[in-house]
Image (cartoon, rainbow, N blue to C red; front, side, top):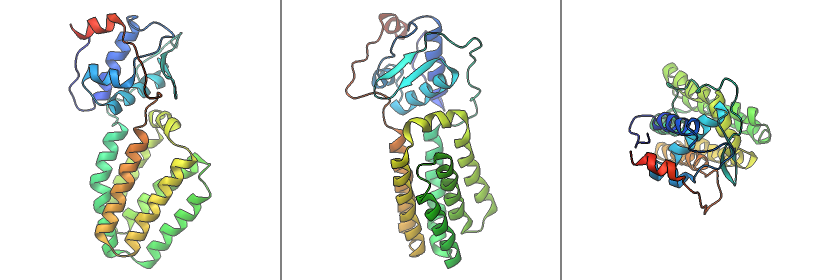
Amino acid sequence: MFSVVESRRLYHQVADQMRSLIDRGVFPDGSRLPAERELAELLAVSRPTVREALIVLEVEGRVQIRMGSGVYIISQKPAAAEPVAMDELEGPFELLRARAIVECAIAEEAARVVRPDQIAVLDNILSRMEVSLEDRPMALALDRDFHIAVAAIIDNGTLNRFVGSIHDLRMTPYFEKLASYFENPATWRAAMEEHRAIRDAIAAGSPVGARAAMRAHLDQSQLRLSESFEEEPTDGVIPAAWRHAGGQ
C-alpha cells in the first residue's frame, strides 16, 4: 500500500515505502524510477526528502544513482540486503537547519569577543584548506576544524562538543555516499570563500555581519545538496501499479 507519509525524518518512511515497492516488483530490476519531482508529488514530501531516501536505498544496494540520468533498480540485490540502520540518524537537511540555529549565534558572539590569536588560527586553517581542495578527506577535516575554531572563540566546551559531533555525523556511510555526488573541488572552493567571509566579519568585530556570513554559508551548503540526480526536464514514467497503490 502506498500512502502519504507524515512524520519527523520523513526520508526513513519514504525509503521504507520505496523498498517495499521494489520488493513487490512494482519497479522491475533494471528499470528507472520516476523523476524526483513526481515521487515527491505522490508522497507529498519535498524533493530533498526523496533524495535523502534514495541515498539510503543506494547504500543498501537497492538502487544505482547515475548523475544526469536518474535512479535505477539494481538487477540483482545483495544476497543479504538489509535496511541501513539509520533510524536515529538525522538527514543532512535536518542537520543544516540545526547548524543554522546554533552556528549563526556562535559566529555572532565570536565577533564580539575574538582575539587576534584566534583569527590567526582561522587563517591557518584557511591556508591549509586552499591547498587541499582536491583532497576531499583533508578538505572535510579542515572544514570541521574551521567550524570548531569559530566555536572555540567563545570558550564554551559544550558548544565545542556540539559542533564537533554534528560534523562527525558526516563521516557515516550515508553521508559519504551523499557527498560523493555533490562535493568536488569547485564546491570546496566555494565553501572556503564562504569561510573567508565568516572570518572577515568576525575579525572586523561585526556580530551582524558574522551571523549573516554564517547563514549565507549554510544556505549555500543546502543549495549544493539540493541539486537533482537527474537532468532537467525529465520525463519519468510512473508504473500503473504504483499509481493504483497510491490510491489504496
